[in-house]
Image (tube, rainbow, N blue to C red; front, side):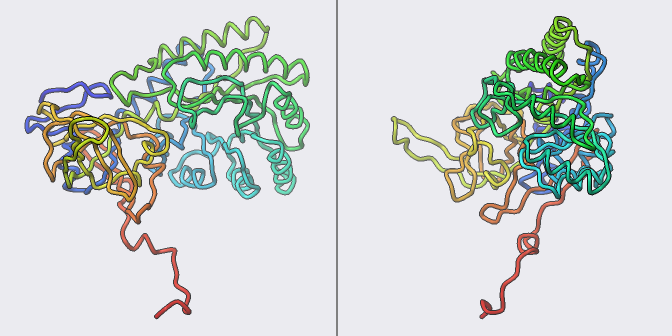
Length: 446
């Protein structure tokens, strides 16, 4: 075998010229499981979990790493994360249900959400999760009611908006002042929320939380947020007497969708965060809290790829300038990966059954939905023909999680690969699945 530099370390090309992941030939995976197909490298996910955890524990031993399950969640993924000793956050009753179905320990779960319902809060409290992150004043009222009705107690964190402006797409910013998430620090809402949480019967106030954004390619915004949150810790102590035992700074570290994307390494990120945190705490004379984080994309993004079958190929004149464009159509698109249409996400790809051939043909990868549905503009691949297999890289995060049945497409299967073995962890939907929850009133029947 030879090796080719990929976005995730190195992945192998077999002697037959096929791309391999987790010791499995991608052509064989397609023959067995069909396309489109999400493929997740189990060993890569485990290695990332361990490296991320180690980077912080070596610099700041009091750590809890919460995997951000919104990035990618199945029952098998919950079991994998549990086996690595991480905690996990969920953002809905559905995510909580899937985590529990996968055997994830309830006492290592945290519940997020900007509009949690009373039903969701009740479900979480009954399940015995570790803590709930409070996001608005209505939620404090609802949770108070739930705890009184159940005669229960639960740990809570207060989510604060630090008012920083991350350098990322406007649709995945979360830490600025004008955001739907959390309590504003500048106008006093965050302190007021802490006061109410401290006074609320059944709530055990444990700390504060923030999240600045997603797909961040530097540590500057997190560093700013740490300083702001340290100041908030001091204000909490001065105004309420409460000690912030837990500080959660969210996630957001980016991954390499393109070769020129160079996010900080786990060690570089950890060094920046822990240095800023310890300096701020020492200046304020505050005790060191448990540092909590919520990496998602950075643990799974580069560990996944999606396989498609190439169909129609057509070359057309370009209207804006002289020349031609070659459209290569695949048997998927925005139903299995809506990110390019949602916020102009970018990807790289290769033809998996020609991975050893020069990528000397410029093409545009088109999905087959009734929209523009372009997955990748102007990318280089080996000379394509109908029937080839296209591998789109770095699709481990927010692809399966955002998949839909648009145009009544079937959501793809998911396989975990590890040491040459492939396990089906999510079966491909069937046509019957499309209508299993539907009914036709008798008056409409012919």
